[in-house]
Image (cartoon, rainbow, N blue to C red; front, side):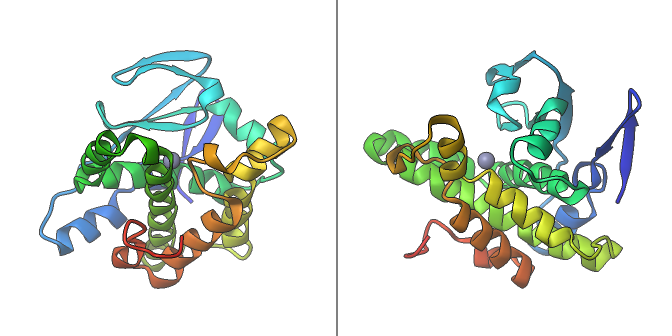
Length: 216
Ligand SMILES: [Zn+2]
């Protein structure tokens, strides 16, 4: 795995630093891929989408096409969610880069319009958006392995474990002790794991149409 050292901390930036995977996929479709920028911050940070806070977890801002991550989230991933491992970290960034891919493909803008037209279904629409980003991160994991032979035994399990640990139902259970399905915006742990696996097994984007899927 490609690592960048920043302030003595090693960061997995294989997806951000190595644009091979999405570059190739986009080229295949006659499109050009533009890499997102990765911004490491602590506490709060100004973004084109408003103020970013560590408590929000890692996020992608479509307006400036940057992925924001607070290093403490990784530590939390390890401790609170019991999802250690470098692939778990790569999965988290790959999910955010998935949102960037959605932005470049025009999906993100369509979703904004769809939510404006159907405000009462906004959460449900967002879940489809999130599960698609999970599926795209699975596609990335597959293709990145084909290109660079990057996966080591146990890596996919690490990614799945992270997907499982940060499902909305798991997060809600930890935070409030019960689950409120209406407030789901990322999908359940089971859904996140399944969509990641779908993308990973196929290694193709066309299996990631969560907006058409009858079963999420
Ligand atoms: Zn997301």
